[in-house]
Length: 63
Image (cartoon, rainbow, N blue to C red; front, top):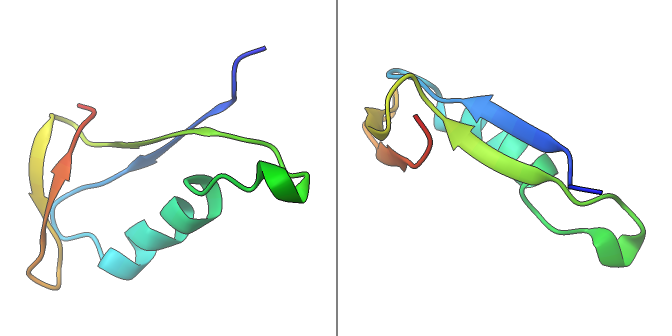
């Protein structure tokens, strides 16, 4: 069976903190702890860079 897909939507002006939380929860392999594995993806309306409210630029691989 395929791993469940979890996608977070990134957008211009997003807080890096709010983007990082789902990355930490679903993007880290914790199967050795008996937890499920997820196919985690960061998505946006279009593939390419987005700009956070902290001035960071993030390359979003899934549009």
